[in-house]
Structures are given as C-alpha cells and as structure tokens.
Length: 115
Length: 110
Image (cartoon, rainbow over all chains, first blue to last red; front, side):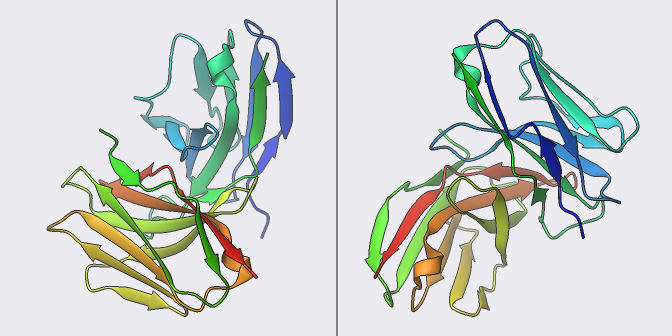
C-alpha cells in the first residue's frame, strides 16, 4: 500500500517569499491533516480536513497560511509571505474517517528553511 | 501550560536496560492516549495505544492513570534500534484531534 506522499522534500526561501506544499494521502483516507513541527518540538496541528471540508483550523495562522483540499483527495498548504519563524518541517497525515485507533499515517514531510 | 508535557531528555541508557518515560496531560476531557515513535529526520509512527487497564506489546508496556492524568511507557531489554524520540499523544472528541507532547529523546548505547 502506498503511503502519504509529499513534495517537495526540502525548500529554502527568503523571508517574505511564498511557498506551497503538496500532499497526496493514502487512497481511501477521508481525513487529512497538516502539522508543523519545529525543531525539538512535537507536531502541532495546523488544519484538519474531512473529505474537502475543514474540521479544525483553529491553530492555522490565517493571515499568512492557507490550505485547500478541493476534490477531497490531494491537498496544498501555502505560506504567503513567509517569516523566519516558519522554518519547520511540514507534515501531512491521513487517517480513515472512522478510525478510533488514533493511528494517523504521516508523510515524510517538507523541510522548510526561511532565510 | 502545555496540554501534554514530557521530559525532553535526552535519556542515554545501555543496551539491555529498562527505561521508563512519563508524560502528563492537562485536559481531563482527553479520551484516547497513544505513544508515537519518531526516528531522527523521519515521520512519526504509531507505537501503541494506551488503555486504562495497561497494555503490553512485546518489550513495551504502556499505562494510563486517569486520576493523575499521567501516561507512562516502559521499555524492557532495550535494543539499539529503540533509539528514537517517543511522543506522548492525547486525543479528544470524535474528530480524532491529536495533541502531541514535545517528545522524549532516547539513545541506547552499545
């Protein structure tokens, strides 16, 4: 079974530039999550989708971050404009909507460096 | 105060030793509890769920104390391959929103 795919794996940009990340979840997984993981910290949920609807975006800095999942499959996360403190690994995860096991399957992440 | 608190370590223990990690959570509405493992520069993966009665998976034992809002993970006969960061995770609500602790870094030395 193919896992969660993310691209790019690495991105270096200057502050105030824009950047976009892409995620393709495991086939059949209705729930998709974007997390931000700063070095030395645990992942922090930015946004959760169920199919193409937003379930939780309470921790998404909406002045600069946006995310969409138009057809209920792939998703993109955008940062515009980037700040130095956005340097982190951006992890995408997916799960079955009915999963009570707590198991989310994570992609390899995109490591963002903002200079 | 963080919702999930863990000692970040690092813990350095010799191969074959027993090591235990703890974590505390602040939200009494938390319903589900897990340990995830994250290898260096890799993604987190579910290690095991944690049940009130305590549960074991091979060399790993997890326990939950709801009254004290405390979760533990015990690793017996540690192996070099156990070196990783262990993330304590709590969830509340049917939406399966996971809240991660900052992780405890473990290094097993030969």
